[in-house]
Length: 528
Image 1: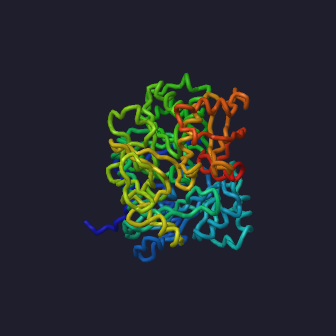
Image 2: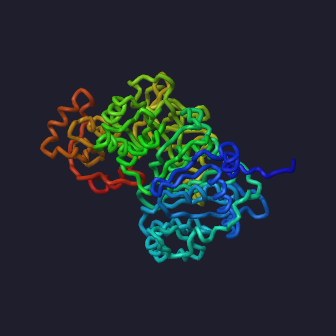
Image 3: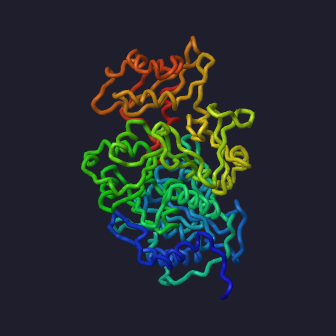
C-alpha cells in the first residue's frame, strides 16, 4: 500500500461514504432534497478543489501550528444550508479552517469579526448581501478576499458558489493534517463587545464526537432536526458532527419553528432532539403538541440555560426522556450525561461528567470545594478548544490545565452537577450571596410566569436586592403577579433575602444567540 496522508476530520466523509454510501446523511427540509453519504463526499471533494484553487490549503502539505491556522480561513454568513456541510468537510480535507459568522450581528460587529478572521474566501447567502456590504463600509475591513454567493430565488450579488465549483468530484488528495491543526473558528455568544473567535482543532472535534457518542449512546440509525444555527457550536458539535461520525441523519432548514420541528419528529421518525429551553417550551405550547406522535424519540436534551420543571414534566408526561445538558464553545460542548435509570429528583442537574471529561468545582483560591458547596465549574478534556484567536490575555484567563467556565456550580454526594448561574451574575444582599438562577427557577414556577430574569438593583437598607423582570404567559396580566403575592408564593421555597423586592414586566425578554435570553440587555435596561 502507498503511504497516504493523515486527514483526521477530512477523512470522515470518504470513510462514511465507503461504509454507508446509500444512507441519507443530510436532509434539506427547505427544498426536500436528500443527500446520501456518497453524495456528501462527492460534494465535499468538489468544494475542496475550489478551496485549494483559492489558497485555502496547507502549503506544501505542511501542518500548521495549533493557533496559526496556516491553511487559511473560509468565513460564511448564511442560514443552515447543505453548502455548510460541503465547507465543513472540504476545509478539513484541505487543512483550512471553517469560520461561520452570525447573520444576526449588526454591521459593525460583523465587520470586526471579518477583520479578525481575515478570510481567504467569504461565502454569503444572498439575503445577507446588504449586511455584508454595510459591514465592509463600517470599518477598515476592505473585503478584498473573493466572495461567493449562495443564491435564493435566483438572485446573486457576486459569483455563485455553485458555478465556481470544479466538475471533478473524485477523491481529493489533501495535505497531511496534524491533530492539533485548527479546523473550526466558532465565536462566542457575547452580548457586549465583539464575540471572541474560539480556535477548535481536529483533535478537539474528534474527542467531542467520541464523548457524545459514548455518553449519549448515539446510533447509526438516529435522526435529528438541527434546530441550532450553524454559526453556533450547537449547530456543529452538539449533534451534527457526532451524527456524521456515526452515519446518522441530520435534518436542516433555514429557520425552524416549533410546529416545523414537531412535523420533522413525526414525518422523519426523529429519535434525538437537542434544543434550548425556549424552543422546548414553544413546542409544548404549540397546537400540534397533543397530536404529534413522539414515540420515535429516544431522548431529548435541553441546553443553553435552565429548563423549567413544568416544561420537563410536559415532555415526561408524553413518555419522553428529557434531561438537561451543559456545555460551552470553549469546551465540548457535550460534557455531562445522565446515568442509566437516573431519578427524577436529579432533573435540576446536568448529570455526571462524560467518559473523557473531568469536572471540578473550585473556590476563589482555586482549591476544590467540598460536595454541596458552590464554586466555579472547571473542565478538563481533550475536546477543549486551544484558546481565543489572537487574544492572548483572554486565553490565559480561561485556558490552561483546566478550562475556567465562569459558571457557578455545586456537586452533590452522588456526583451530580448543578449549574447555579454565571459567576458574574452573583450579587450580595445584606451580606448574603444571591444566585439569580436559583431565584429565577423558583419565580418561574408561578403559573403567571412564562420566563424571568433577576437582576440586582440598589437598595438603601440591604445594599442590593433583586428585581424580577418577567415575561407573563399569554393569558395573564400584571395584576396576576403583585409583588406581595409573589413573595407569599416564594415563602417556604426561598429564603426571604433572596426574594425579589421589585418587579418589571416585558412583552418578550430579549434574546442573544440561538433563542438564549440576553441577560446583559435585561440588566442594562432594568438593573443598576
